[in-house]
Length: 405
Image (cartoon, rainbow, N blue to C red; front, top):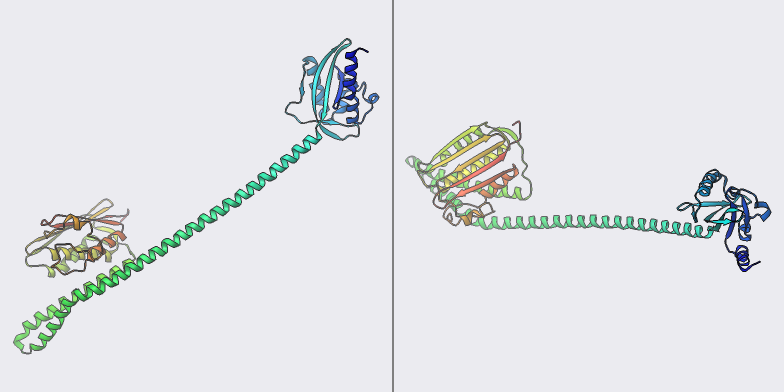
């Protein structure tokens, strides 16, 4: 035995992996001791047998076709790249393997050498690692889901806290506004009520002094003064009540299909008796007169704007009122030839209690235009003011009217 033969014999017998030699027809020629122990066979039991004897039955048929193709195109390579390979022991049990193939040209013909490694432990480790990874991934997923739920709960709680905080802030602001309204009412009442109440008292006293029949004109004069003063007090109180309801959200819009021309025309007629000497009020309407609006709020708006126009315009002046329905838009204009409003004052015109710098000599609460703006807003409209000091004022109301009205 030469050194090469001796080296091969030692390698074959003492290798720590299974070595199987077969001919091109798939007949087992020889097996090393390690492989025999792997499969539980003796050398005599395997020699001359087909290699399919070591393969599970479910793979044996396909293996024969693979073996034939390898015989026609032999080359050294790992077997079953990317596949799970299994071998079958003598007792029928199966185990995972890795197989590398080599081709050896012997004097008696070509031989195929298969190196077989039992990878059961590695597979178990891989399976255990996969299970561990899956378990960890599931734990991470569960933890992530729990954290996501917790974050969502915290976000919802924060939103709820913010909502409640906003509600508290709004409630506090509303309370401040109402307290301010009450304080302003007390302050204004002591000032604004003084003149009409004094008029009522003095006129009542003077009426009692006019006892003669021919003094009836004087009595009627003072009765008219009393009526005017009471009406003024009523208007002031109504303004405060309206603002209070607006601040408390107790003004409810009750829209109905109304005849705008009739409402404005009737309101203009009501205010004729308030006209100053030779004041003229003209009203004209164009387009469809019907619109879906709250009639009570609309009338209050027109009353307030017309009353202001009369109050802040001089004698012998003209006041123009117009309404126009074009498509789904209604535009109402009230224009006077009064004192006008400065640009600085126009910026605060619709604020509560605001009064222009040039009307301090005319009695008023500074609430009327605030109420007008709020009522207009409640009916989804908007109000504009065009004015110049000394050249009169025009208020423009615009409402979007729903279709079919």
